Image 1 (cartoon, rainbow, N blue to C red):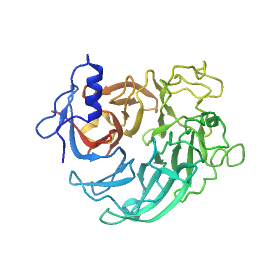
Image 2 (image 1 turned 180 degrees about the vertical axis):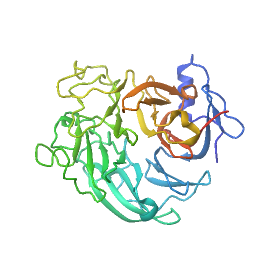
Image 3 (image 1 turned 135 degrees about the horizontal axis):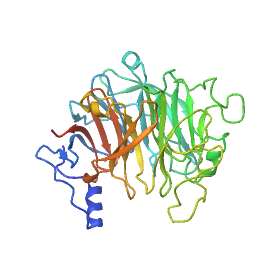
Length: 383
């Protein structure tokens, strides 16, 4: 049932903030219209911490719930029964659970998909990726096979877990720094705080930057904190990724093989308790972000716009923003013809809704909220 109310998290925040203007009331059909002329149409509710969305060729959607379930949305309604066949070792703790999802480029022929999740290994855990085959009715997984896993650690924070395919058929997998292992983000021999590049069977491409030595062969780039958005921009041949800074310092980067993105040697953020991580914001051999947010927006999910109804945004980036002093909105980022990024535009910020993921298909843009009682919306132009 679609609830004709804002998520409870948003209501609580409004109450706490007192002086802010109230968010718009939902319309009779449950949709919400923002001040910038955009409408959110709810198509599925009562999801527990939705995390990742994938659109099937049929128009149906698959949504991961961080609480360890994979759900199907069909005909703009959530199917009651979860998809069966998930791995039995999903760690549901802290920021861990069932996280990223992406389809194989040949999904229409082979029905293969990939899931990333926090893997419970008893005293330790890690980010793991499995491949699986989706049944014709999209209600069951089979041939579930672990193809990759990150570094063992003892925390339930910063799992990364976004995946994206490159044109050569290789797969990018983001691996968080595990929070307490931040210094390891600078060690190319370890997988904390890295972006990895693998093949769909888990093997390592021979042209990765460290296959001949100097680091873990799977490492594609390093010096990352917690990458929760990654897209390949086909028109410009650019791999973009965004990551959470600490308190401040969220950033979008252009990802190139072998590059060092600085964490935690350089950062525009500070510790959550206000103490300084480093006084340096730049250093030789370390890349600068192409977009940064200070204060934080807590970015999560990112899409390249390809939706016909939003042709004026074609090729731009959409970034979900979950919380922080400047969060709870979508951000549109102009992408120039040469792959450089231009101005950013805040969208839906008057609605005060935290967004965990966003995808764009030729037919529609979908967003998922970051709430315990999560909702998947279709984004439309109000007029």
